[in-house]
Image (cartoon, rainbow, N blue to C red; front, side, top):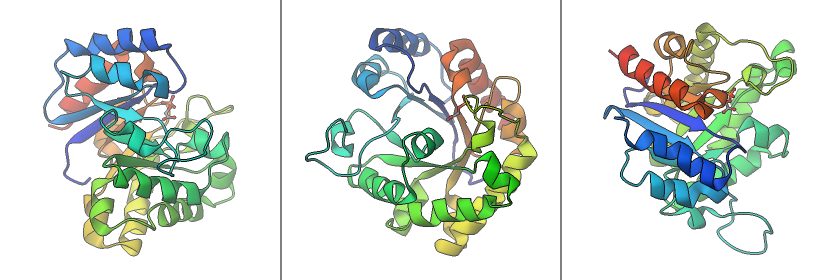
Length: 258
Ligand code: PGA
């Protein structure tokens, strides 16, 4: 672990109409968020503005689920990183749904990480292998490629500020034929991720960079991942759509760090 504050991010994916997103976010305003944990929520792009307003007095950070890498121009349907300035603190890059459903390549993630930093937004680079890749013993190669290309255009200082999320595609709640990942799987891959980062940057940076786990984390297994998974926090999808579960995960994080 990096020694940073623990981080819990809720990825709401393509859920909630704007009004619902605001109503949901409002549930967190009166809740006390422990100072020594960073909490973020990732609403859909249309809801970013209003959710960010609703949470303006809360320490909860706003995470964009995506953005394009060019700053402006003829890119119909896209939103740029400069457009997110003042709205989002972080941006997800290379989420497996974007890689596999929307066919985003490693080169895209490289451009997006660099674009995020140009706009003062911290990228959360998501990496992870599919079940077929794992069964064919390609996990290390896949992660190595995702990390070495994704980080290629960044300075050492930028790498030290960013976040990596290890999300095995086979463990994500929406994957057909999904499997359960264990804290041991997470720990093993986080060690490997730090090794790759060490080889492409430096051992010091590899130690400093924050690494999260994501893939069907819920209020029953969050403690296990946080204490035994070797991680600095969690990226939570489905369970973050239930405010009680999400708040419980934050509580578990607070308890497990002691
Ligand atoms: P999940 O999603 O917790 O629903 O598996 C995690 C993610 O895809 O970020």
